[in-house]
Amino acid sequence: MPVSDLHPQYENKQYELRQLTDTLDGASSVKRSGSLYLPIPAAMYAASGKQPASGISTDNNEFKNGQQNVVSNAPWDHNIPAYSAYVQRARFPEITNLIHRGLVGIGTKQDCVIELPTQIDYLESNATRDGKTLEELFAYLVDQVLSKGRVELLVDIDATNGRCVLVPYIADSFINYRISEVNDREQFELGVFQYEKNTGEDEFSHDTETAHFVVRNKARDPENEGQMISVYNTQKYTNETADGNASVPLLRGNPLSFVPLTVINTNGLGIGHWVCPLTGVSDIAISIYQKDADMSNSEFLTCNPMLFVYGIDEDEAPTAIGSAVAYSTTNEQAKAEYVEPKGTSLSHMEKRIAALFDEAIQYGVSIIGKTPNSAEAADTVKMRQAGNSATIRTIIQAVANGLEEALQHCYMWETNTIDKSEEIQVNPNLELSEMSLTPQEQTALLQSFLNNAISHDTYLKRLQEGGIDLAGETVEGEQDLIINKVPVFNDEANDDADGGSPDDNENSSDGDN
Image 1: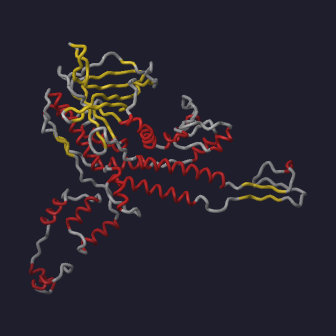
Image 2: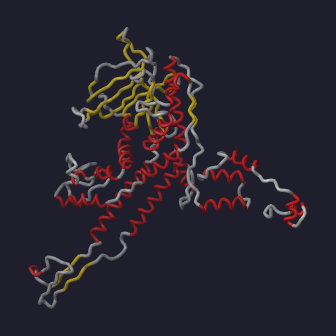
Image 3: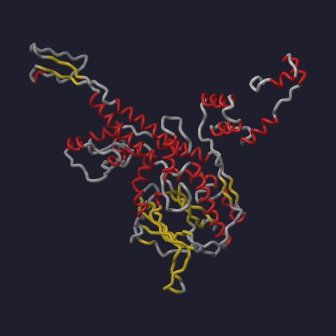
């Protein structure tokens, strides 16, 4: 098979990945995709004299180069004028990107604690080819898993300094893979990454061609051509043709016997489980876009009054209307009037769009892992969350485990050993500030505590979960501060002030105290 052959799992995800990419990019990408997301109404085809295309199509015109042609570069430009106007009037909601950015902010607000042995401590400040620190790489990995449900992390050799470097790949590029079991553990036999290679002949060109990067753990034994050996090797392809022979990456002369590739998904490591957390939000965004297009088009067609003229010959009919134009006729039966739209036929669409916005919020809340303050039942949210089987905490933990495994691969290669290091630790902060309490909610929470409906520990914990920073940092630390800061009152002074005895104070209720 050609190097561009797709794994069935990836092939099944192609449309979903394209939709997530476009909805995260925003309105321009969605509208530029034409009928991929917004089918062309049959009446517009009929009026244009064109035949409907079979299957999914993107019927946009070829965009002209140069900024002077701004109109033909517009996302809604199309060879059917009515459809072009239809797309232009439609509004695409940016909820996918908004919820994505919010979740990434929650997941990366607190830094994780990363501990490294001296052999690979250089990765802490320079972990990737573009100079990301390990903290920045961690945040990038969380971002990718939230957006596409998967991210790949490969250990490679930096040609500039001969050290290990971590290379992240987006889910869209990892098109094919094979795995095998070694000692009851899955290992990669093959991985294929697809990307666009720049082929421009000058510095201003952006021409590209499709290229592939292949990683394997099998190679022909140079001493015995008929035998295969287990050794990590890589090979590049351009337009289906290999760019030379496979090469074996060496670190200080040492190869690896396995592919140092880690796949991180929403629930852990491996390629078996692939769920994109934001697909539900993306689907809703597309549905709102389609309904808004229909509603906006209906408003355009029905909300402009139309002049009807009765009882006059065609050659007497007015050819212009306006406040400065007057017409008269000798025909006593002639009549002119405006026909205006009546009824509330579009109100149900407005309600449906509002309901879809609420549903999108529920998806975001279910990923956070909290029950929303809405009409949706808690059991419904739990069922949806169980269906996704991923929350922001499971994603953060999965990313931490994946980064730790990749760092172990670096250590094993640096030390030329098969033993892992106990010094490598990636501990994420899972105590997340997931939402902000409104003043009303803070008041209600305080009232519950004062009415002995919840304990003091629960009160402090809910404040912390609601985004209220505690000076003690943790509930236990806050309790210590409270105990150590209790003011000491003079009993005699209290007696004088209250006009009573210590016995009276001891017998008073907690509320009076």
